[in-house]
Image 1 (tube, helix red, strand yellow):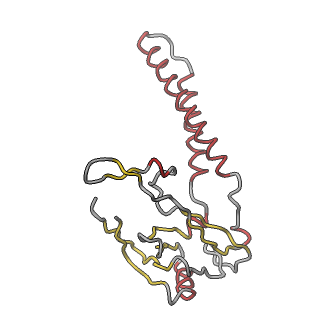
Image 2 (cartoon, helix red, strand yellow; image 1 turned 30 degrees about the horizontal axis):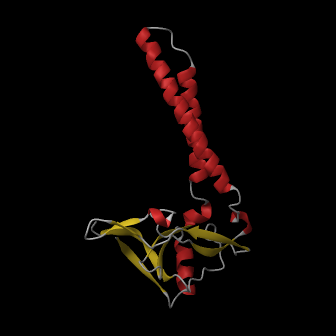
Length: 198
């Protein structure tokens, strides 16, 4: 796969991962920060969570285990009290949501088969199909609400990392906050307009 160049309208920040400092302002509203919120990112989300399932190819065509194990990077972002929230229990709710989405999809498929059968036989159509569509759409809306990024994740978006995880690319929603971030990390950060993805 050849590298792709991604160009941004607004400049993004390239900073050293280990020496990263966020300004003492809320990235959402710009108010002075009172709390600190962890922002956790998995650098390579496409790797399997079980290293034994990551296989690479060798010149001889045999599978070879990849020794890379995924790790998380956590950045601590100062936020105001109004935008501080903890992620406790959110993973559990998301898991429940995925299970219920699967059940609702199964119900929708069965209701679609019954609906098609009723149409084929010329029998009056029951309300089950429309009820199943309503349930499925409701669960999709709930899933969207639970999986969308929060206000802090939206204001501080991690675009990616370099190969050795030495540098991180961050896109800020507010230009003033980006300028303050650059002042805090003047020696270790720079503005870039594009990145090249492998």
